Amino acid sequence: MALSPQIKQLLAAEDELIAAVEVRLEDTLAAIMDQALSTFERNQQFVAPAGDSLGLLLDALGDAWQPGTALGVEHLLSVAQKQDLTTRAAIEYLEAYGIQRTRQIISTTASQLSSIHVLVHRQG
Image (cartoon, rainbow, N blue to C red; front, side):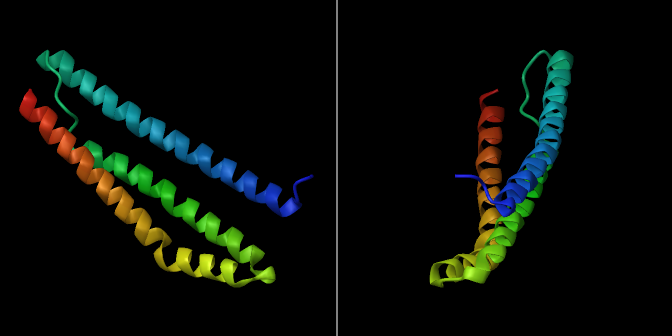
């Protein structure tokens, strides 16, 4: 079965989004690793990255989630011409809770990473 032009367009948009996010995330992780390596070379001991590094990483992840959610909503809205109850419910859910849920996931991840950072720091 051949893909419809609409699906091909959606997949192309997803590929573009992934490529853009991938570059930013790789750059952010490389900067954090460079900072950790410099600290290690200077002090001869591993020190977990500073809190600002965590913030940069969370910003990069957050910037990825928001356009991804928006792209999903856009796709659902384009299908909405054939709306049934399930499609309408999915659209309403994503509009109301999608980005909020994403922010909760990012916040939880940040808390977990901070806890690991504190634990590693205490263990030396």
